[in-house]
Image (tube, rainbow, N blue to C red; front, side, top):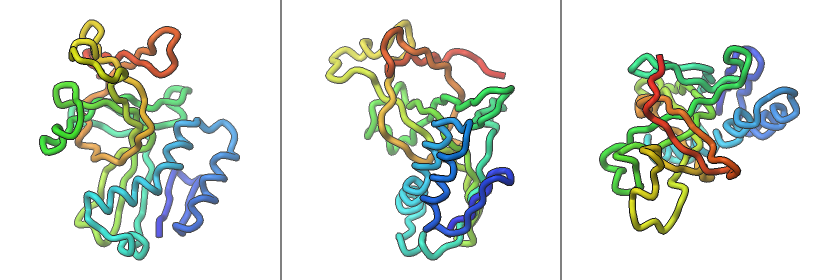
Length: 203
């Protein structure tokens, strides 16, 4: 069972009412599609995280009471603020970030010197009696290298900016795996090709 908590507007206490909760969001005016998309993916990402990382069974997940607090902001270890909010100085803000991959995972992915890139959709805190401590997690929408079958690794870069595209892949990751915010520049006339600038400093 899940208990949803986002300010005072959305609270659900039954896993089987999750789809009804999503439909309620979709029918609410002025909600950003990225935010709705995050909630649509959250159920499967929660199950995947607890099965793969915490090694819970499906029965464990169904039987356990899990409280999920949805947050709009979080601070990284370098004091940089990351956002997943509908109102950041009057505008929706969903941070693009670089993620440091675990050494054991780096062989499974083509990384940019150990870094991967993603857009934040939700920032959550997960609380359960079965957990030793609460979990601070981020639901992300991943970027991947834009061009396939590239033989020269330098073709993945444009003036040191890696060239990426969004892929239909969503996961929950620990907040601590995020190292910094990044600046995304859309390639002219191409809707899903981006230049990633990781050299801008945020304060």
